[in-house]
Image 1 (spheres, rainbow, N blue to C red):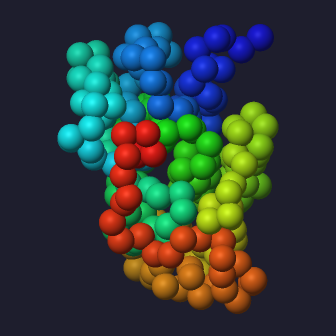
Image 2: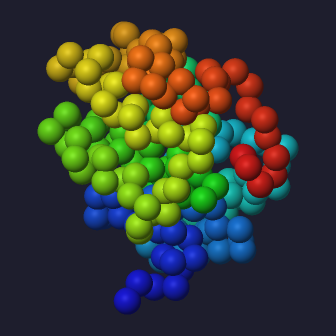
Length: 206
């Protein structure tokens, strides 16, 4: 039987005791929940949002408990830039363990980041384990039209990397334009909402 907090926050271990994944806790219980879980760091996939109350509350709650807070920006509908993916890799490497990955619902951006973490950690041999992070159950990943690029990204990365590590490939060769062309060549031209430029924010979406 899963604890109520795990259900409410869509919490799951990606690697037990090392990396978890979760949704944004809207009821103000983030700090106590992370503390009970023994989490040492939070990687926020919604980006730095100094002017929004959820970000202020989140950073205040983590700071009060000595939990590291790292910001990264992902958009589930827009293809990421190289800088966005490099920042995510940097967060993986610098976050104290155990850390947790978190977006808004813990379903789409979090599935993507969790999958990349497994590849970054275990190499391309972890591909099947990484694909499983996109499961509808228990993670509730039900991609909408422009979120259908998230899972195929793994195949694109594996093909394009030609055996290089994920981090090396991202830093030296990845471009969103190549990803866009790859998706188009496989009949997935409408699987995204374009290349990321500037986020369209709201207190709820971001």
